[in-house]
Image (cartoon, rainbow, N blue to C red):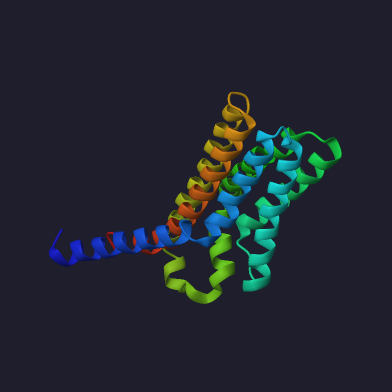
Length: 214
């Protein structure tokens, strides 16, 4: 690898690190992760788990709605999570069982894993569908005819499917092995770091993959 190639790699790595830090460690992270954990833990400490669960759920959904109203757009994954969380929250209020809400991310991850991996079998990777819908005519027809074009989207779609599976398995283990407070803290933090991280990689990876050995 020559000096020019080394410089390109360094620039890619630097850009990726910057995007990761900007995506994860910002005010949205505090509002969507730290505050719900504080609410849930504080009320759980005083044996008000149901109240803490409802307030944390309402806060998380409110953050997504505020982001949408302010930017007029919502991340598709955040939208799916908000929908499942809302169903879990309603079920929690009706059943008055916090486990209903705590288990909702497991349902979300399971559904996403099936959808992502299933889309590959259906013929068009889901990440490709999202990308082409979002940026529309940004991909030249010549690029679309290359095998690497679809291969990049397939790799990313598999990555999202695997992430969803690992998150579901982790949450299942935690749900039956640790306290509700610890489960909520680890589950919320892990999900809100791993998802933005892979989202950043999803933006960076295709361009790098298509140029590699081109």
